[in-house]
Amino acid sequence: MPETKTYLELSEDGGGAHKFYEVSVNGTVVSVRYGRIGTSGQLKTTAFATPQKARDAAARKIGEKVRKGYEPAVQGRRAARAVTRRQVTSAPSTARAVAPVLWRFRTGASAFGIHIDEDRCWVGNQSGDVHTLAHDGEVLAHYRLPDGVKCLVADDFWIYAGCDDGTVYDLSSKLPFAAYEIAADVDIFWLDIHEGVLNVSDRQGGLTVIDHEDEFQWSRRSTGDHAWMVRRDARAVYHGHGKGVTAYAPDGSGELWHTQTRGAVLFGWQEHGAVYAGTDRRVVQRLAKRSGRVEATYACDTVVYSCAAAPDGRYVFAGDSASSVYCFAQDGTRLWKLGTGGGSALSMQYLNEQLFIVTTDGSLACIDASEAAIAEAKDGRVPAAVDVKSAAALPTYTPAAAPETVAAVPSGGVLVECVQDGPRLRVHVVTDGYDPRWNVQFPRHIRQAGARYVVDSVHASSSGFYRVRGEIRRLA
Image 1 (cartoon, rainbow, N blue to C red):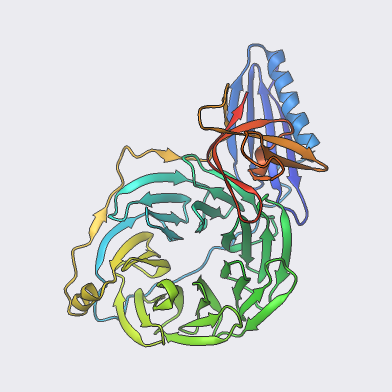
Image 2: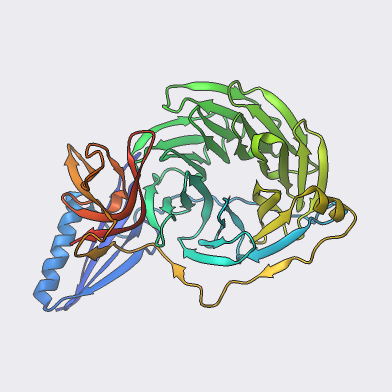
C-alpha cells in the first residue's frame, strides 16, 4: 500500500498552543513528526509486526490528538511565530587597558544567555547551543536546543532556557524537556521565572504571565514597546521597555509604579531592594523596588547592552556597545573601564570577585574583578587568557522525543499520575508521604489521562505545588 499521511494542527487564540502533529504510515513503519508550526519539528519512527498493527497504532495516535483539540490542516497555511533577534553592533573599545580575562570559551555564535551559580557556569547562544562549565573553564556538558536561546534563568535550583520557537526548556536533568509553551502571538524578548511562574516581555511592550502548570494567567501592555527587561520577585513584576520601567502587582491586579528612565531600557538586573536598568542613553539607573524612585545613575560612554550588580549593590557593572566593561561604586562613582578583548558584553553576572560576560562574538569570558587584578590591568599587566576547548567526546543532550518507558518504580523514585480535573489534566503525587491534593508542575504536552510517570524527586514549593527534578519516565 502507498504511504499515507495525516497532518493536524492545534493553534489557540491567546493560548500557548501553536503546534503540528503528522502521522505517516508506510507498510509496517509509523513515523510521527511534531513540533511548533513553522519548524521542522522532531521525528520518531516505530516498526510494527504487520501493516494492520501499524495502521491501528497510527489511528490511536491520531485519535488522541483529535480528542485534545487538534484538527486536520494544510501544512504551510499558518505562519511560524514572529521572531525578533536583537540587532547589535560592536565597536572596538576606547579603554586604555584590557580586562584581566582568566579564560574564554567560544561557543560559535552570538550569545545572550548566561547563568552563574556556586557550582557551574551556563551559556546559551543564538544557534541553540547551551554549555555548562566549571568555574575554572572546564566544559562539563552540552545541550542542543532549537535555534535562538533568548536567555537562561534560574528559579531556585531549576535552570530554564527560553528559545525563539516559544518553548522554555527545563535543563535541570540530563535530558532537557519542554516546561512551558508561549503563545504564538508573543514576539519574545526576555524571560524570568519566579516560584514556577513564567514572565515574558515582548516586542510590543507586552507582559505575559504563565503559571506553574503552563496555563495563561494574565497580561498587560506597558506604555513603551521593545521590552527587553522583565524581572520578578515576591513583591512585583518589573517590566522595562522603551518608556522606562513599570512595576505590576504579582497577581496582575494593577500597576504599582512607573518610572521614566533616561533612555529606552535595553537590559535589566535586580537585587533585593533595587532593580537596575541599562539604557540606550549611556546609563544604568538604580530604581527602588518599593517606590520606583531613581536612587543612582551610572554613566557609561556609549549605549549600555548589559548590567549586573554585586550582592546588595556594593558594585555595579555595565557592558557597552564599544566592547568595554565598567565598574561603579554604589553611589555612581566610576571605578574602572576596561576593554573586553572579545566583543561587547550582551549579558553578565558577578560572583565571588569574578565578572562573567557573554559577548557578540559568542564567547563566555571569566574576568578577575578583584582589586589587585584590576590594579595590575590598569598598568597593562594581565594574565594570558586560557582558550578553553570542548572535549571531542563530550556528549550532546537533546530534548527527548518521548519519555522512556519503565516497568517498575526504581528505588527512590516518586510516582505521579495524570488525573482529569474538569476540562484540565492535572498531575498529583501517588507515592506515600506527599499531599495527594497538590498539583505537580509537569510538562503539559506529555500529560495523558490515567498515565503514570516516575520522576527522580519532587520538591514542595512555598506557593503550594510540587516541582519535579530529574528524569521523567513513563510507567508501563
